[in-house]
Image (cartoon, rainbow, N blue to C red; front, side, top):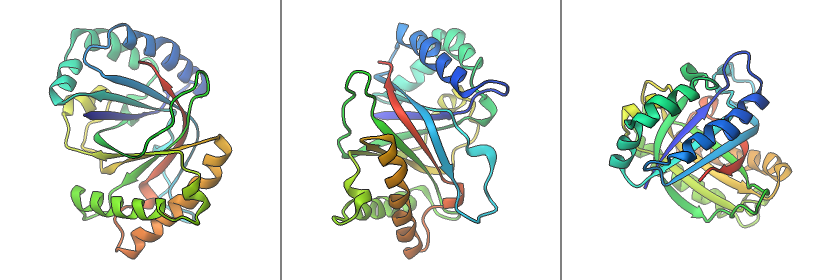
Length: 247
């Protein structure tokens, strides 16, 4: 199973609210009308975000995002067939250009590893979800980063006395894999992303997410430092949102 993840930003002159309204009420229904070979489509509506490290001059505006799309496919063939379908080319892609700032889009193809089964949506009570985009450390290959990232992540979640670990209600690690360039270009991305992947952590409330995730990230960063650094905190970023299942 493959998941195409795309972090999008609204077009210049558009409000965050207008962007989410179009994404949810226009773009989502257009996709649901013809799912093609997409197995699952989830929108993550961002309500807060953080990026970089304190005192680091590398803080850049490129990290601002309004939503994260997750599209799940059985395999690469299903993904390629969907992206080349006339409905995607003539309807979905042109509509996306109406609200998505394509030049700034970030897309990556991943395989998901469920660490802690996430909670199910309960009617209008969408799960609170934190998406941590982990940027590879310079000079390290994708596989090396993923192995170290997984080990550090498991150690953090295993801390029995840690409030940040106990607050996690679900966890899915999306690990980046080489992908179909056409799929990435669908969202405006041009180059292979330098991200090892995305960790999705679920919490009971917005307050718990905003309070507890920073402690999780500090623990992860310490373990990265202890092993020589497997990710770049100054170019990694965090999006806090609510999950909306389109189909």
